[in-house]
Length: 575
Image (tube, rainbow, N blue to C red; front, side, top):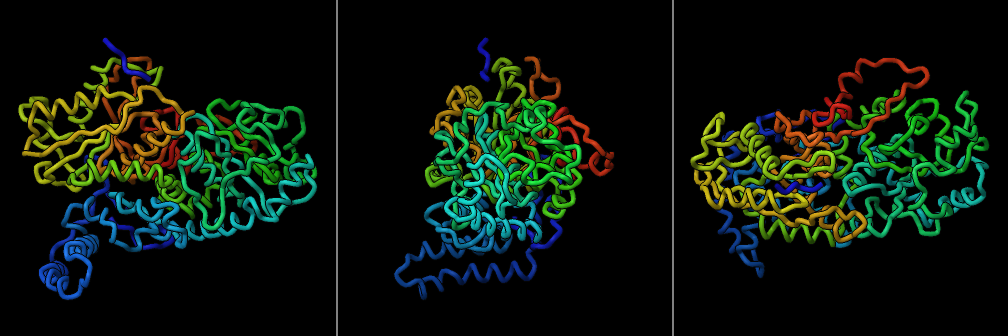
């Protein structure tokens, strides 16, 4: 037997209460509106609209004007039409394109189409950004523009770095992010490093390697986040886990002393420090998360960050950052959702892959189900077992449309969609499979080819690619992977694999709490096929286990930083 390999945004205010309740399938429950007087007005508008079109459309074709106006009315009314069709109408505009103020206006639209178009494809925007987060982002953008490469302040900071010693406090302090591991790890690491930049008033610069080029647009207006190639620290991609300037070695050799952090000065610390915050971190590396160490590191002009983890839950556990994080993100599970939508915008190359596939295969469906399947070397099981686990999970959580003649025990004849209607009412369902392998796509497609779905539901099954092996070092592979992350994020419902960064990103971009397949640890088929996520925040899979000097137990932490649903030794944020 072959083994498998490896909607609307809420009003803006400082509080951001969740816009969903938890239904059975894990997606936000949309608001229901009665027809009332507003509905009557809407019907009248729709009835008279064609006549107005012929009177005022001019040279523009009537069908085009009708499509545009109809889409706008659908969005305003709460949407009695197909949501995906209404949202992807190119002429529909509104405040949503700025994601409730999350994005800055004024970018060149043609240079990064995804920035102002992605909102049309997302089904849910459960959390509006707090006014405090918006203020912090605008302040950061101003700071980045002032301190970015090509500015006098950047040149001054680089000159101090070249000197090899700290001489004076700089107006601009920097975080240099170094890519590490696969694309999913990189994206989660990058977003959480940016959160740390917000917390510490630093400027984030990205060391863009060949396999990371042409993936994401510049996120900050009028400037760049790319580290210039003439950066004084050589061989950034080959520094390893513990170079001489690593925090671990500097502490060990007493080149940084944290006995009395308040006495630390710029002259007493090196011009840069390498931080290993990844899953292979050692005890001395973990001291980064202690308050006294943060006071000393605040004096260092350049911090080089090597990390493959989502570290926000651990930052929340730190006394000096907790209150600030609470002000920026009143809803704990909104951190990655909001920051990912703010920071990560696929380039036009990748956006072309995404939109061409979406409009060719997915846009006409009334409902879209995303399934992401990943097995790791330590958790491989036979394809038959994995497929049966997917089916068992689907029956348990009512995810896939049921088929005629399916005698398996279920709680009802039909599945349940995200707004509580039956599958029959949905009309058509598109199932998108994201996996390195084609096995699951072939089996699910064959099932709906050989058996009719209950209620007359029209089911289509798609898989954009099956690369067989992960090839992080290849740009084209990363572009396809990024395209599939975003295609999954346009789903109404998500079924993802446990401990998969790919799945974490798809769900938090989507604004959906996914159902998570249980990992087959030790190659043993799990007795529980899946669990429903309680929070859409990603899991920090390898949190630091370190008790810092002066550590005090915080009851609030026990409530909001807990073990992950899919990986109990990891931690994540909960509301």
